Image 1 (cartoon, rainbow, N blue to C red):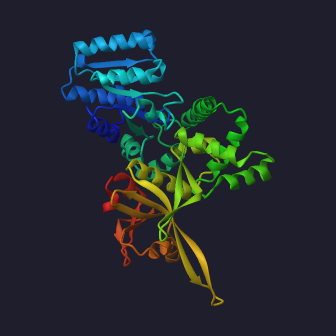
Image 2 (tube, helix red, strand yellow):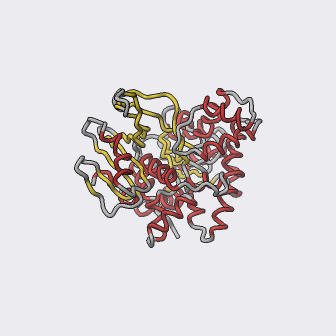
Image 3 (tube, rainbow, N blue to C red):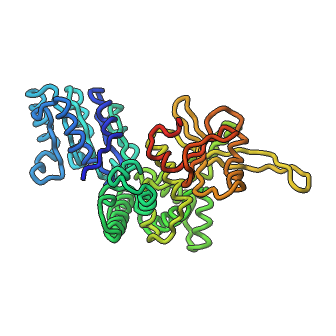
Length: 416
């Protein structure tokens, strides 16, 4: 079964002939090679590009090993450009080509149209674009969104959402039928692929420290953490002497590998960022659950993680909102309190304040969820997303409540 990654296909089509090397980055096994060599290639053919104009090389295939030599490949590519001036290069596992940065920059200067994927540590790092001297254009790919995942089955969306929260959206995992196969694949990918990449790239010697940090972060998605707080946890629980500096480095490594992403806090009334603490979200919940041996399955925080990923997929900059209020207590005295808005999503002139509430069983719970939203005095849209809502509905305060299914399955859901 083919999963049409339409969002990323549209990105590639839109960026054609823009004078840049199109670099597809992202977590291992999220579907980069299939996007390039099957989905995008088929689109080129449908658009009338002749098969002779498409030069497709997978550098990890045995027959293509000679092309890993930069001089051999460069000579071959130049000759093909002379024969087909509008040639399109689809280059998979480009990290196996030695000195690939200068080779591709040289071909770009000769008018080549280049698309590349890679899966070594460099391509799993956010700094890959700098290697192309300002002439790289990144298409960052994520695991399957829920809409993509649901398109495979198109049956019971509630049951599929529960499954998605548990096993995540890595395509190979999603297409596996048996739960035991999904679990085995996720465990293997975490230890043999992702963790090994991070350790190898950054030459980490105390691997147990990194693994302990991953355990703590995996247990605390949706919670505010900072390096100093984490250091104290290591000291009290693990009796470790790890420093705040080392923890900060490890956090950077995990973000660079696209395994986790940090969301900053933003003071909505003060219009200023608060440096720490932050929240960390997994790029794929299946990996998070595998790290915890599927023991800590928290629907509330898992749904929050999924909403964050969906907003990032839709190209929003996402922060954690904070609203400071002065509230009168039972003793008649006023105290300063900080209320949280789960997400402040910004894109251009658009902004949305979003609360994630897995269940709203009664009016008391609803009042708790919307309290921070009511304290925001600007005119941007306020949204509550819950697992149970019959249909998108505005209340007397102008706050929109919708189900997680309406939100995830409609790319324009925030504009209801």
